[in-house]
Length: 444
Image 1 (tube, helix red, strand yellow):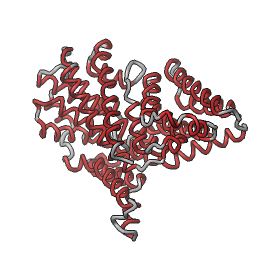
Image 2 (cartoon, rainbow, N blue to C red; image 1 turned 45 degrees about the vertical axis):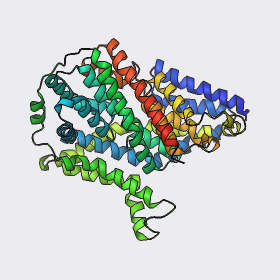
Image 3 (tube, rainbow, N blue to C red; image 1 turned 180 degrees about the vertical axis):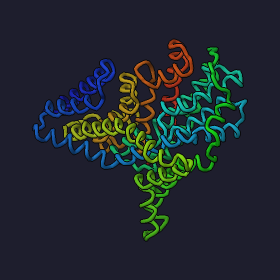
Image 4 (cartoon, rainbow, N blue to C red; image 1 turned 180 degrees about the horizontal axis):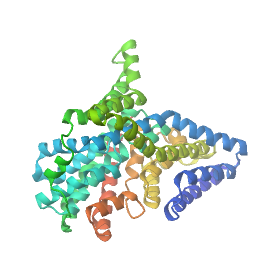
């Protein structure tokens, strides 16, 4: 097998190759990650059969841990979209903060909706409402677009059950309840930084919203929207159950060591909690639509989750091959004293994100790289997970599908989108990392 220095150089070349193939040449991330895993494994001197075994074990092991969770989370997001529950949650927030604070309302709505719903989908769902509010309030669409998009982005990258953070938490062996709690905390200043950037900087760009429906017409289109409590329940309940499991398993054993603790650990397992979330989300479906929801909507959610599953599994394969390399030992003896700390996963993720565009690919790939190094570097798995998520926000530009969703749906010309939105994602990611640094003072 090659030396640690050579293995590290080969890993650097492998990451650059992933960036070029997925970013510049738009190759499928699954094929790239699997292909690079083969090449990297053979180049570092692993036996061919060991390379195949590592790729299989990494892929299967990753999906064993989080496959069901990803599928369930995607199904739940689809049901929230189809039933109008996302709109109901937004209405509740509007009532709380008032239409005069429309950017704040949409920022908060994005923060909540993107916990189970992909940020791309969340933006599309909330865009008509965002435009209608911009028209009614007289606020530039640039402000409203940046406020909504950054709210969505914060939780999408740092808070499970979004697939990226779940995949990272699994790869790094992080407690999911802890990741959710820390992610929710770090996402607040990140989201608000995006809002501040929108209201102070993006307001210089006047963009008139093109609307086909008023706010009232959008609400009427769904007929009777689900109630606020039921709309929030599929999101809040699984998170609460997962957090309870984490508390129950504290070393101090606050709930004892008997049947109740076992029960909390069972219902708070991410698989159980997300399946409960899916079942609860069916309460949002009208009786006439229930059959369609079970067969059609759930099918859509499963199809949407497929690409995330295969990319996540491929990232696990890459991580398994890295784990079998001499890199861990090399870092332990030569690089641990550099004290990059939590900045290392952040900067790797940011570099991958900026280069190839996908936050999920950046998160999965960085988690695979960091997993074998955590113990050596002395990093907390949960903090590392959200640091990777924070890095995956920096920056969203033309190679990111979300950039085009935000710019095209809001009517922002590309040059303005770069100035108002891309810059906002850089600020948002940096503020998230500062929040993580502060959290690291209290989390061990």
